[in-house]
Image 1: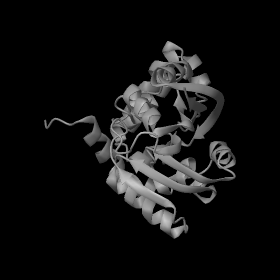
Image 2: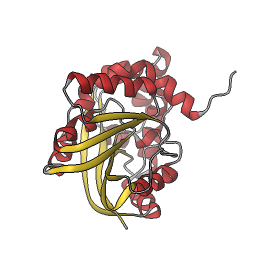
Image 3: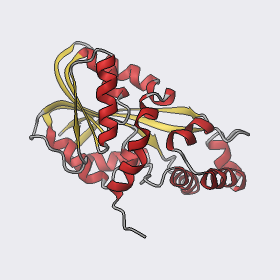
Image 4: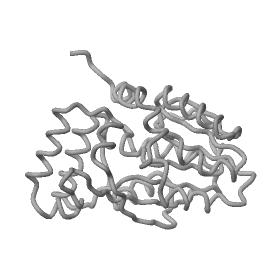
Length: 255
């Protein structure tokens, strides 16, 4: 079997599905996007870096309020899809760059704000990526980190990581809020505020976005049926396999 790097795995998983993520209802909506828009209000001089931009929805949300958004992603197909959608929306201040979050091609202190949404659980090295985010943000700048998170309890965490990996082999880890706090502190960020929420995940579209093979989809359903009741209850697993995930929106500043 040909050896794969994690970066190759991510690109192979997400590149062919770029359009699905641009059009995803789950990713294009949410109170967190409303919060991001409010945070950027009256920030006409601000340059923003959107790390692991995916379908570009965070970039689309803040672009009308800021000077520039650089949408950055490992997948070239993803940033090409974002560029097409930005043009369709008339968002001429969105530019795209391709690369790995662990080695950003930007100068120290180049951005006023760094943000990322639903990307960190795919990063190969969370510490290195956060250190890079700290390097490229201005000393008086700000950062927003949004992701699905682990509940922090071992049994629940194991269940979460298992079904995430079955659905998407490029999954690395959903971190707990406590783990994010520690990683951000180590990278040179101070947490200013945390907003925790729950999001509903429709089982069918969740699998279709990643084109999960039938054998893995059935393994997820089997796991949902076999796991202990506290896990089914915490993730609100429904009869059709739909469920809920914990998320966190972490606002931080450089120290």
